[in-house]
Length: 238
Image (cartoon, rainbow, N blue to C red; front, side, top):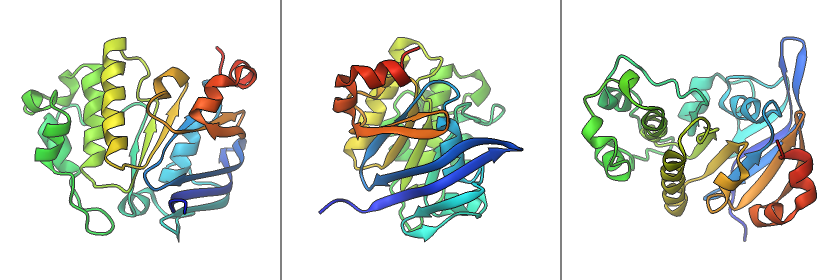
């Protein structure tokens, strides 16, 4: 029996003003699955995540979280339903300490889950522990990315939306972020990972969905995508 869907997206259309960005997007992520949403810059990856999080509400279509319709609901309602969103620009609080950033986000999950707390965050993110009193604005890019992920986990989400977590980071930091995401995957986390970098997703994601010009153009396992030169050259090559 296949795992139930944590969230599903059905035929959503998203507009910015009068410009249509997403065209009939269908997407489903099962419990415990890590899916890579891949595409070039401007393909619609970030908008898809924003639509699920309620930041860019679809004009048409449906979004369900744990079977409950979320279309038309405010972002804070979707967050309380268990969707944790880590935006591309991280959006940490620069004047607050690392620990304050974490405590601000602390809440139980939609089913009363309380697995993520300060102690566990510092265990899973050991680089943050000695920085707990440092202001967020004084962290490096990689440290800010880890803080953004850890802050989202403090809300005990049922699913994580990660927007370009490897972008603009040094290779050694990208490697650390990859190790962290593998650890989260192995603990049973449900993750939708939007990325341009397919190689970053290898060893993290099991499934791959490719988006181009606001439409889904390919779905399969990450291994089959890696072996499909035609699809990679057509939709992912820079």
